[in-house]
Length: 259
Image (cartoon, rainbow, N blue to C red; front, side, top):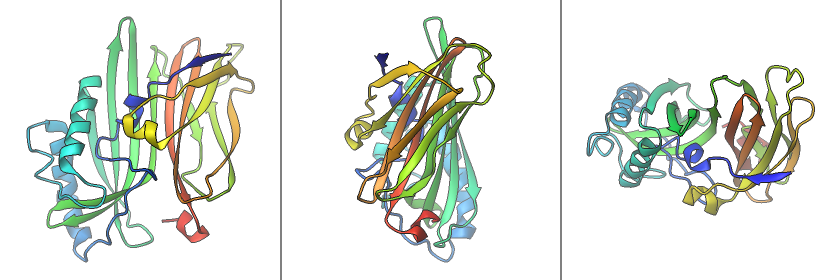
């Protein structure tokens, strides 16, 4: 067994719109009655601003509010572009949530070359959002995951990790290769990311061990208090390396599992 670190700064910084808190989310305000009608132009403006990188572009489409500090978000976007110069953001409208808030899906792709290795990133978030006029004024992370791959082979993996669990609940964290290993020797490991590591974009150490059964299978325990957990996964395969992250919401009632 050995200790390695997944490239967590790339994973956690992928969704540059989000500012992590100690609990992993920000409380969003209830949307106004006109939020649904204003959301589409707001999302179009947000996608344009994220991809343009022009000074003040994000500040023009974001209003300071719960989970939203435009200057800090711009700093995260700029830092992410330094790691992935060809990064592209796609903003998609989602269905209304059970509590009446509007939602959006933020999808980010990018690549980075280091020496002979090329890394490809795919990250996705689902956010609950509110608007003020034609600008976004609040957000809360509902779902979040990312995958970073190296090598020419597009190793397919599935993150079989729940989006939300109850406080104190035991649940499964499974990451599997979608195709048979066919005799290949693979190794993997899993590590929880502390709130301090998430805020500082620091990578936790991951202890690698040989994998059996074509994946990584763990049973873990949710905290006793509501908030969130972030898991960092590292898989090493002869055809490449896969780093992945997944955020799990931790809630205190069954009703809150479906937001």
